[in-house]
Image (cartoon, rainbow, N blue to C red; front, side, top):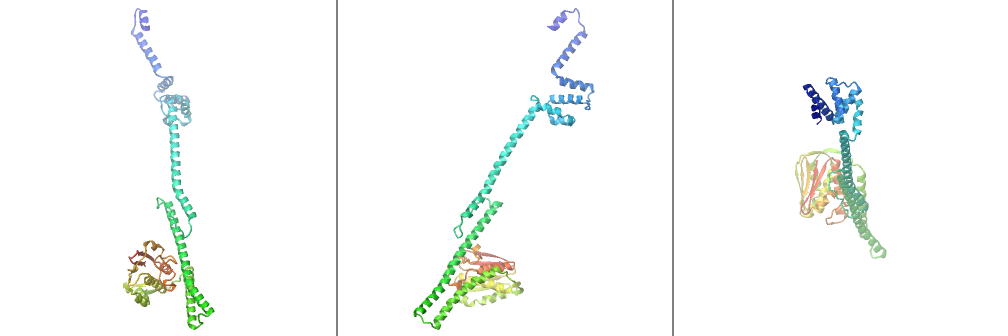
Length: 400
């Protein structure tokens, strides 16, 4: 209507007038499309011929305002303007209506939520791990406190025996088994020694009471019987004292070259009488010319101990095979054997196993033979392996 009225008020119209009207409309439309910030930026850009100088604070402010209005994030604005003018960006962030503020706000909330979740997961994981790690230790501590030497020991169970806690639990289980074993061995030894002591003491007591009452004559025969019983007592006490003394004293070895086969055969000869009585046999095979740097007396004692065990426990009509090579000496028999569960304890001092005991202290011993054997082997820098099972024989292999 405005244009119609204007045209009606005129008699004529020129092209110049029409162009002015179009130009005015264009300017008005531009003003409505662009904000003052944008217009100010474009005017500066036109004034500077498309290359704005940032040496003036005013120009920097115009550029920053335009970039902020255009939605450019602070990260990229920082790359375009000097850092000492970055305060403008901070001001834009403070404006709750600006895109920068909304972006930073969302980013901050995301970071906070992520950190809370991460901390929560970390704490939960640590609590679970600590509980799994500490619980077995608490159980082990409680079990150790409750355990009584000589009583049945309940093994501590742990799911992973290969990690550090598992190795600790395994060591504790092993230690407690050994402690309980030692207590059992001690109690058994005391019972055996008490029995062995009681027999000669009772016999001596009977003789002395009989002599005192006039029932038994004090002649040479009865004096010899009393003397024999006293010798048995002294033998038992001396064996225990000698073993304990040898445990405290370090073995003194004298290494000399020896023919191992000949040495072992000499020891076998000393047992011929007992072998004949038991209808047992010993076969020595292997390298007859093998020379080794050894302590002769200790190796003889080792051989005596192993042959002695064969004589006592293998059974009648059994065969012991001794095979000699440059790598090992193997003592294997076809006797009654022992339970596999007893093998780890055979070389413990005073351990005599669960097999039926026969004979007296003179023939059976006090259970230190294999303990001494182990010590001799270790003193030579060797190692050994025991294999056995009930009714499947017994093998003692020494690796040299």
